[in-house]
Amino acid sequence: MTPPATVLLVFGRGVVAGDDGYRLTAESVARTEAAVAYVRAHAEVFRRTPGARVVFTGGWPHGPAGMPGPPPGFREAELMRALARDAGLDAYARSAAETRSRTTVQNLAHTVQDGLLGAAEFTAQHPLGLVSHPWHLPRVRLLAARVLGLSGRALADVPVTAPDPVPVRRERAARAFSRIGFLGVRTPEASLRRERALTRAADRIGRLTPRR
Picture 1 (spheres, one colour):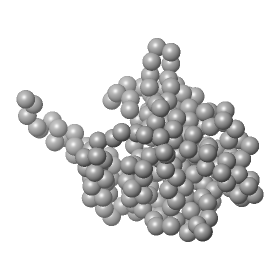
Picture 2 (tube, one colour; picture 1 turned 30 degrees about the horizontal axis):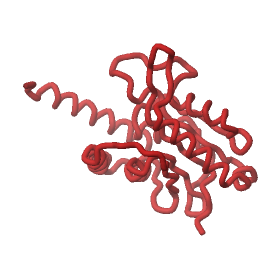
Picture 3 (cartoon, rainbow, N blue to C red; picture 1 turned 120 degrees about the vertical axis):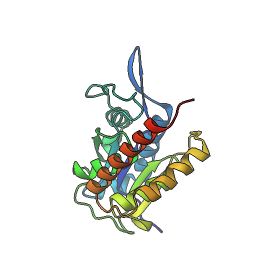
């Protein structure tokens, strides 16, 4: 039997800004609830494992370009962490929030750079848990291999069961782009540099493409 992951990395799915402030999308709520449910299901393992933790990731992923992000306390990961703590997460595990990211690559890289995974070494017996929707997890795994150097049984999928309709073609394209675009990357720093280079290249192509 595969041992449960006692370090979870929870990927956000958006923050909505409205007249009443900032709130999580239903999909972000579902991912938070899935993380809490997983921890509860393995409560005794979490309680007796030093370094067990849940790390929520995300800052202002779907915010309009150039606009300032939410104020401190209302970024994506902070809202997810607050929701999880309200649901009783603190009784089972410590938690942390990575709040600088806008992309999956940044989620992974900044979590490592900020030291939020602690000193854990992830193996088949001590995997890193990835909490997201099933359509997203294959791309997360692909990027985790590039950014974290982890693959196979060193990663454990914690899929969300709530629906999250995403165009199949768009996700297939994103996965193919990630596979090719991040080829040869081996560190968080290199992954961030590559992402910036790819973004600049895409912007240049966009400016050169005639508009109809």
